[in-house]
Image (cartoon, rainbow, N blue to C red; front, side):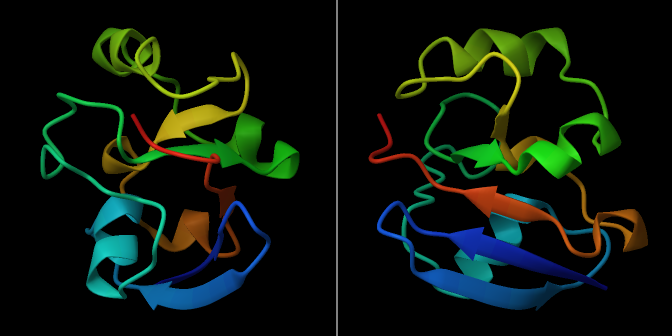
Length: 107
């Protein structure tokens, strides 16, 4: 289980426990956190679960694969270093304390 902080664009924080094996996107969806739409349901076929990872966490996450890189091209105001798709981040104990911030909108 990992405690993950989701920060809405306006600054509202949601700190939730997400079970290992789920994705960061599923943690947001299952806890009703606004700002992550996940239109494709986690298939990495859209960019509506885009977030900005806190700078302290950028180097601690697995590398983006080619499919995630391609989908981030469609995200709203992607950041080359901090942008990630939450459907591609599998929760484990190693993600305990992860902080992600939602963009102004999802497209």
